[in-house]
Image (cartoon, rainbow, N blue to C red; front, side, top):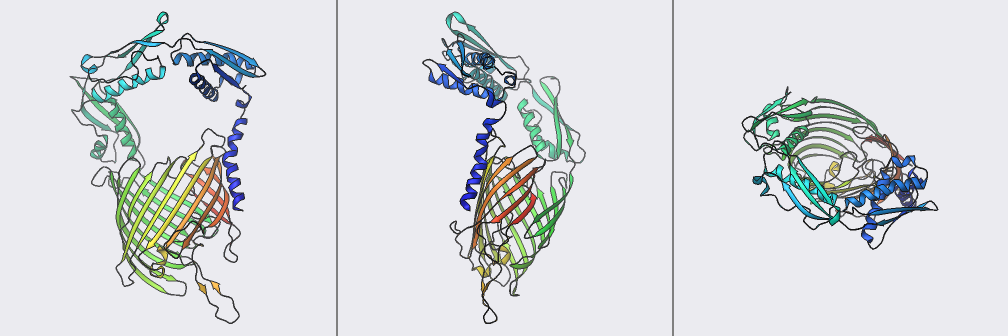
Length: 594
């Protein structure tokens, strides 16, 4: 069965690559071959470029005769050759048996005879080397790179009101050469005068000025305006922002930012369903500008037949420094699982710091009071003080529907019991995900992979609170099995003679191993599908393993909203245990499984 699932997954992911060749009208275009005598590199480059031009061409839709296609593409090849400096090239096309052959005589490659940059002398002195030098071929891409280099230099080192760089290439046919001139349009050098922010109603003005980061008297740079507007939008308090620069007066310009505030309050409602937990509802309220400087409070409640919770979070951005946030939380929870019943109250705070564009570190403290009753009526009271430490690396393009990139997260959480149970232990968890999308292939297949492993050390299984042990199974774990249905169980001896021993409900373990593989497809802008395989298990000993996993597999449907996909999955257990597992499980929720 597992082999069959693997074959199906491969067919879904790679079958579209073949099917893409049958997309009308591109499969009707005649095959072609480009021949360049004595220059294999140029031959391959022209062939690759012509293939790319075919993909984006709407003109070719109107051509049915291969000879019309050949005449049109001959013009494209001539343009490509000129872009590489071949101004005396000749292209001949021939059509035979529906196939086109282009024979190219490139001729001499025009070389740059002279390069000059026209700009004020005081600015010219610091300009470094350009991508093109005297004696190099006249390459259009390199010429444009030169414009970019000069613009970047001026933006970094000058205070020009406007940066406008153009170029002129003069071809000398008699010498197979060219002259290249870059010109910087005249513009005054200015400094910043006053900075105004208009449109503010509820946001702290000083807070927004700090985000703008432009002060009176500094050198004026257009690039600083774009960066300031982006920072304002990233506060999540601003729906739109524009900027206006005044006319210069005495070498000074004033800057005005006009903003449109977002609505700061949001009410959230949600529903979900799983076979093992039943239907659930959630409701929440969010305020993103509580104290007028971007502080966010989020209150959320969830309820289903086995769990009810009420949680409040307060986020204070830029806590003590710009790259650091403070998050405080309070949570009440009641769980009625097969393995245990738990009532808990948790309060904690976490400081997270952005180390780089993709890396974030966090440290915090958490105090949890809980009453837990396990199978057999044994009740324990815990007063756990924890100090979670985390490190995360994230290059994905979306938190709820990633299509490319990867994540790696590590959390180490030492616990100390302030009560009498003596449950002191360390809970460690590492999770990695990866995503790759074939965007140019039919149905845009995405291959998604998740690996997860956890260990609890420092205490025996019985001394770790039941709601802190590891369990496997469910919609966010191993689909096909009930929630927390995988993992160690006790053998219960019969009370009456002749009865068979039975297994208890899952008791949780000190180690966890999980792996998930998904093939995600997008049939239309709104609808998609998925085929998946999940494996996982929990273990009594603190040694995660990947050689004794229980596997589940299934298919699902996705409806893509502007916020996140709505998912409907149905899965079956591939290692079904008689008397423990149902024939299938159903999951309905918001967002991808991982």
